[in-house]
Image 1 (cartoon, rainbow, N blue to C red):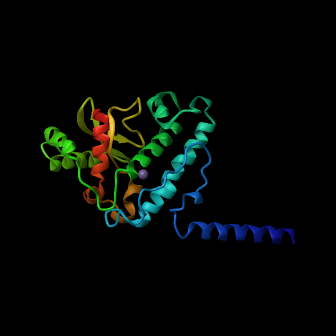
Image 2: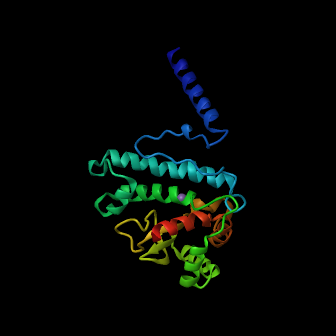
Image 3: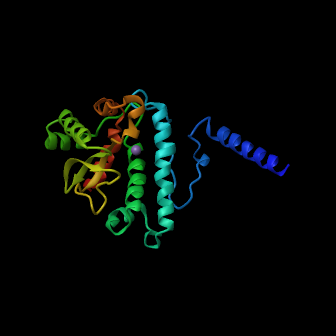
Length: 236
Ligand code: MN
């Protein structure tokens, strides 16, 4: 009797969990965040970046991958007293002093939080000031896209492509794994303005091995208005 009751409760638990999560990942309260860092809500719906980025990829990327970085970060911080009470940016700035598990997951959390805000359904246009800076640094927007695409394509394995503002100049580069330009160990320095996730989990469901097609399609959802406001803030 006892055994039967336990298995009944277990089954109900699974069904209830499935019902709670199945209709949409959008309800942030559905996620169990276990520490000080928590999953930010997406500024759009999972299907709104179609066709550039498919709904399923967005659901898994945000609700599974990004959440996993956060949960792993919270766990790692709870086990590392030196990392406690620090902001995410503080952790990144001194990342050489922490274990790899914090480097990977603090980077993963920051990079994804930033990446979601690099995109907007339908995309948007850059400000006049940013266009001027792009023209003087790269000759044209097309040339910037070419250079950025090259950085994204040539990043071997998993990583990110970046547009940064470094000492008043726009620069393009890439980072391995979940590293980013805010980390003290990063070769690429500067204020991040735009980032593209080139991990296979970001594109494999729709594009399989065709990273180049993913990069090309991604330009249609880049929020250049947001990039412009980051640029103007960093120039002040
Ligand atoms: Mn990712």
